[in-house]
Structure formats: structure tokens, C-alpha cells
Length: 278
Image 1 (cartoon, helix red, strand yellow):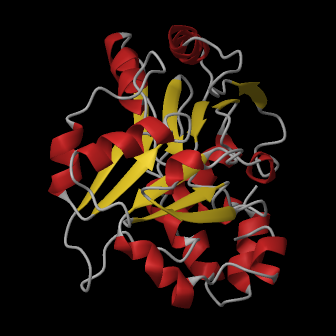
Image 2 (image 1 turned 180 degrees about the horizontal axis):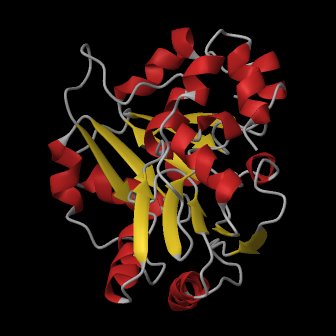
């Protein structure tokens, strides 16, 4: 299962290091909650890749790359459990019960989630249910799209010249309505705001930020399908962002001066989008 990764690392002289890696056992009857990272299959961790090759059952979400799933244990059963706004989606309770049921049947269960499972990914809810069901589990962190996705667009979330703080938030609550946050406090709290799942309510959110005193000329960048061959970036101002239409999703929205660094740091072009490794 590790032949693909070994061949890649072998070309760089690190083959022995992978062979010597002391990976923990993926025991039957346990669940690993693994972050797949954003987009490119190469952004999963070595421990996550190890789990992908060992799993008997893979329960994966909508943001997991098909190219990554192609690297899984050929004998694994793959179960789609994706949630996308406005489309029929499995209920969270049913997903969690599946994890418990497969583990209790003695399977090695991989819950594969885009980004990081503990960053707006319901990983905490699922791990809590596994704990209550007395199912052994392991958390394998991933690269959050709010960090890695922006990096693929040449946007650093912090920079010494612009900001020493950043806020991460989700644009909607569990009902699908705009998040009931203290928007005036958020508008003042940090120069940079990174928003997950905010495209649907972007007009409302930008109006709340403007009403709270944010500069209408404040920069906005929207990174869609981050770290994938379909990646695209839309740049606008806070005042005009609410008029944008047909923005591709999934997307990360960043408000603040850091998107200006794209002029020099927008590196993800050409062959990097074609080779599949990101």
C-alpha cells in the first residue's frame, strides 16, 4: 500500500526513513478520525496515509479527493457520508452510528474528513460519541483549509507587516442560517478574518461587518476548490463582495490585508496543478 509513497520519497533519498517509521497499530474494532487536508492528496499526513492503507471501512466526506481515495486499501469498503449545503445529506447521528456499528463488528474504521477533523468538521462530536460507546479511537490532525487552502492561493494568514492576530469562524450555524455571532466584536478584534462556509450568506455577513465599522475598501479574497486542479480565486472589496454571484464552492473567504501578498506569492500554477500531488 505504501509503494506509491515510497517511490515518491525514494527519489529524494528518504526511502529508509519511511521504512523505519514506527506507525501505531490500526487495531480491529477501532476508529481513526483522519484529516485529509485540502484538495491535493499529497497533503495528507504520513500517519493518515498509513491508516488509508490499513482500513477495512472508509467513511469519507464530500471534500475528500477521489485521487486520495484511489490510494486506499483495495479491499476497503468505501461509504460516502458527505454534507453539502442545499443537497440531500446523511444525518450526523446516522453517520456516527455507522462508525460505532462497524467498529463493534471488529472492523478498522477510517473516518476520513477534508481539512482537519477538529476545525468545523464535527470531529469532536463523533469522537465524543465513540467515547460514550466505549469504542477506541485515534485523532489524526490534518491541514485545515483555512490555513493550507489560503497558502495554495499565496495568502499567508499572518504576516509581521500586517497582522499579529486572525479570527476563524463559520458563516452559518447548524440550521443553515447566518452564524449568530457578535459581529461588531469580530469586526474590531482582528485585522484578518478567515471564514468557512460563508459564501451563501456573504452579502449579509459583509453588511454586518460594514455596519460594525470595517473599512468598505477592506480586501476580500475567496479561494474556491483550494489545492485542487479546479482552484480559483476571486478578489474584491468588502463593499462589493455582497454583489458577487456564482462563486464556486467549497470556498474559504479571507477578509483583510493579507490577500495583497498574492501579487508576489501566488505560486500554485502550471505543472503543480497537473501532477496530482499538489
